[in-house]
Length: 473
Image 1 (cartoon, rainbow, N blue to C red):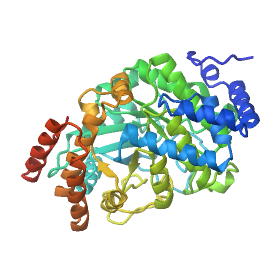
Image 2 (cartoon, rainbow, N blue to C red):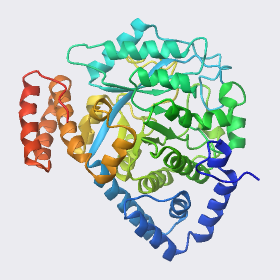
Image 3 (cartoon, helix red, strand yellow):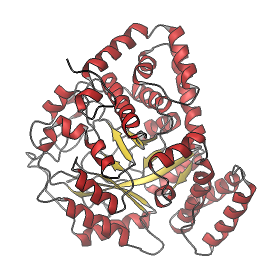
Image 4 (cartoon, rainbow, N blue to C red):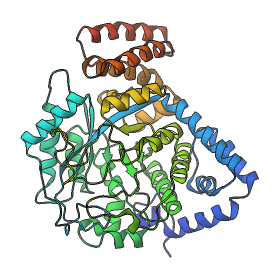
């Protein structure tokens, strides 16, 4: 029998099937044990997180009053660590060439319906200019796995091109990378290229399901994929982002596996995941989400987000435009701190005036422009932030986490959010968005704790109005 060991570097030992099954049995046995539920909630109030067993009990508990307590606590913890800021980003699809056979993704090798496309560096430039003209400063680049069409050298060339483009007042200041599991050597190359976070979704932690869903291609190797974050950290990337594709397998199994992965990274590397993403299976070219019988309701999806927030309070949480505006609104309240806006999930989608659908990886449920999303967030009382300062000031990995845990990060993040929002308002916003934004900034300056910082921010906001850019704490 394989033994559970969070400090092991072997996938089946740190994501241990027997441990997950025992966790789910424990959660079922205790979901109505309100005394235990109360104890776990009290522990969560200390803001130091919960382990996978404790969090699984909360997820399984069906008591309405306790669920409300969980939601209220998640909302408060989110405010404590991330304030009312929401970081904005956009995905950029470079290529849909792929050698894998994933059953839930339209880019799988056997799909003959979709045209295969790979951006040239000139096309990358056009995409980046289009994204800059929307107001984006942070991208997550995506590409299928294909050693011939999308080798690491191609990805590195694209990163170099993205960083080189300065159009009008635009600049992509941080490139996060979501590409297939690779070698320590390749992770070192990505680190040297100046990437932000390396993101890789596990898809499913259930090994048997994983191998069934990835019948062919290098992604079939469960261990190589699951151990990728350890190689990335060995390669010097100290900010990594994990996630599962909810709907592929039983959500409670995935939830426990996800938290075990976070615990493993903390145990081995001293720092947990920088971000956790919570995508759900969606319709795409030849993919029907009803083929997967593990779909979960919007209510349970939101509860998962709330439980993740209180289990790993310091970790950023990401939601994409896969979800509707209504779901995004609720899930932001309960824990999400980063969202995409104005996204296109096709290869070369931004430079086109009309949204192309022929190379989309999944259907987009929130089709609003970035300006509309920014407007919506501000009306709801959030500060849309285009800040990338932590990466550029070296506040990554354990340095970021120690600042976050102590609450000191707020001294940087809040003023940086206001200054980057001011840039957006000056350069890209519609008149209505600009009006709402100016009022919000004026109100939020008063929430900066230190008088000296408040004074500096006011001075810099005037400089931004006069054409200067890129101030940061």
